[in-house]
Amino acid sequence: MLTVRTLLQGDGVEMADVVCSHARGRGRESEQAAGYVLVLVRRGCFRRSADGSEALLDPTLAYSMRPSEEQRYDHPHDGGDACTSLALAPGLVSALWGGELALPRAPLPVAPAIDVRHRLLLAAARRDEDRDEVLERAIDLVAATLAHADAARVGAGMPRTTHARRALADGARELLASTTETSLPSLARALAVSPHHLSRAFREMTGHTISRHRMRLRARDALERVAGGERNLARVAADVGFADQSHLCRVVGAETGMTPSALRRMLAA
Image (tube, rainbow, N blue to C red; front, side, top):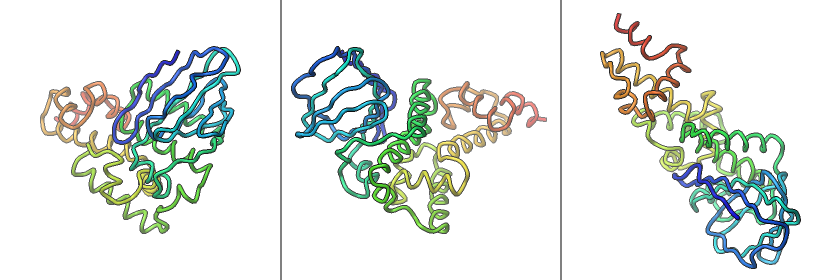
């Protein structure tokens, strides 16, 4: 009746594609939430009862779950539903919700632009695109969705001045220059800021995402190795942090408009 496909796991976020084939009728009397979860509805319609309150949910809404919360799902129509769930570690919940370990209880409206971002993120995760980029986009999606409930709370802690945001972006670049393996949540912890604030500040100051910056550093590291005479691209890819040689070729091609093999010939000359 319920199919769950995990698409991203780690660094405080677990994203899953959840498809329910429940027929019309009342659901199980009691289900218990496992943690802090934000759920965006993609298809179908159902009623969720939790802690004495009931909400009708459809693809224009999202909702959140809290640890050990008792809930029941009833379906007014056949056909079930499809949702995307984003389970969040407590530390990330607190960072996203103004320092409080909580999530809003009322359903959250999902604007058309947020819905498109959600579906594009899901497509990228299904294609197994770069994990760091999917993670960054997932955190940004959660922050944007929660902002509809309380924008001031989600925005709390964002550096107010250009100078402060520049310092934050520079701090992230300095850490990534040491190792591109550092994830967005780890960068945020090191810089004592929330992940979504760091992501926003970095994009504002540099014009690209942290995940894109990470890929650019890896591409330049690869080219430095190639220029130094390394001919085994598979070894280069593994050493500098790419998933495989194909991933290296895609990124270098996107960054330079040339293949690593062509650059190798030019650099060797």
